[in-house]
Length: 150
Image (cartoon, rainbow, N blue to C red):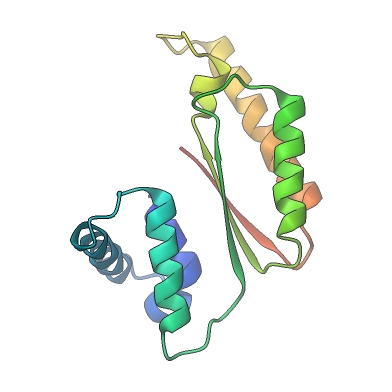
């Protein structure tokens, strides 16, 4: 899902909102990754997609930035997360499309949890609202922030 969203942000003039074309483009990039024996990570995928966009004959429609924040290997701390998100958004100020990918938030909130409870869901919802609000406050008005929680 993150890869399709990434491609939609990079290639709106190529695909419009056509899921089939997005899927074909995604599969082509993934095949290229396998042929190059590169690790199949989102970072490698987005790098290859960006390179394809830059090398294409048509002009790049807008500026893009990819911010990947992975909380799966650490404990959630709103103070440090706030600083990290604000710093990343400031660095990309003025960029027209900012793709903010948040990974492992649930695991960061509850590292040893085995079950979902109402209290845990409420805490996760508060954390996502916190990130949503930071994104809204600290991105420039000309920027469009695409948030995806994985």
